[in-house]
Image 1 (cartoon, rainbow, N blue to C red):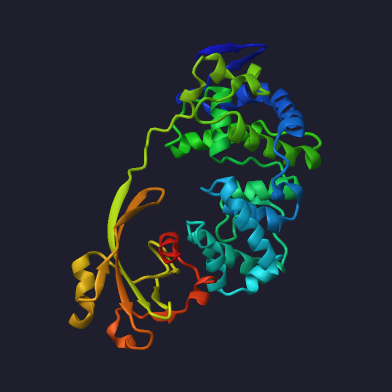
Image 2 (image 1 turned 90 degrees about the vertical axis):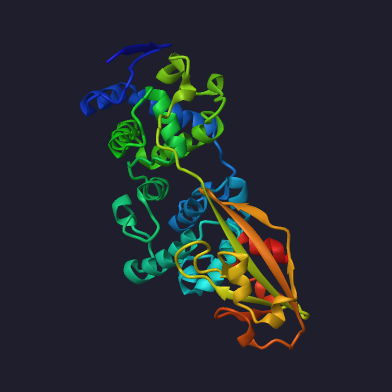
Length: 375
């Protein structure tokens, strides 16, 4: 194992062949200095203006953590505000209908998060008397709360000494330690979690644990970015083995890349003269699970076959477009069917749908591309 001496500190490069005790020993050598520098930096240079940073209320912290999964802060801000206006407490969220929750979530994507959010609120009320558990272990028993989210809530709200390991934190730690283990391997990710735990503060936990956790997230989001990191501004640059190696951007290492796929769908956009549209609820699993949507078909031929000949001739093709999901491109081809206000019987349209007025659409859970079409 090669020893790399950094500016002002000695550290050991960690590679995929290193044994766990050696890895943790290298982290332990940096731990006190790293934690102190990070806590001090967060006080003076970290982010302090985000609304969920001004509270230790686990409901508000939990809500922000779920919304921030795979979603930019700028996008989350408005949704967070609207959710709290409508559901100021976990009891309010638990008592809501699934449609109301999905309606407020509409456009934020990853709709399983909203369904789990609702179920989690109900479990907090039913199993925990309306209070969130105070440990990361118990928090993970709730729907939609994984290890990193549980650690964030427990650290921010209850000062538990527990490590988060989201994407930003992985980047900071692998660069700090020049950790070249392949994070596509669950074994190597467990090693990194051990490193993250060793580096946590050990004193003044009530104050320092929340600030340390916020600091390492801030560092990854604002300075130790995936491309062109601002190393001269980093508070731990003298400890960073990745920087000393001359190529911090090569960390983290993850060889397995997710393959993108594409799916072509045809949509039946049936609309009456009074503005009402025909929507059916999607199955709970799969694309747009649980949301209200135009009837979806695998091809234009399948869409045409679902309609009587008298309606097929009234269809108007809408220019197709691509809606990009994280790992899939949806190629959507809408076909518009304009109908008289009262002329069409329900039996003539496919699926177990219903007519919804424009006013009803404002509170309905709709996929983002459907809401954009209707706008």
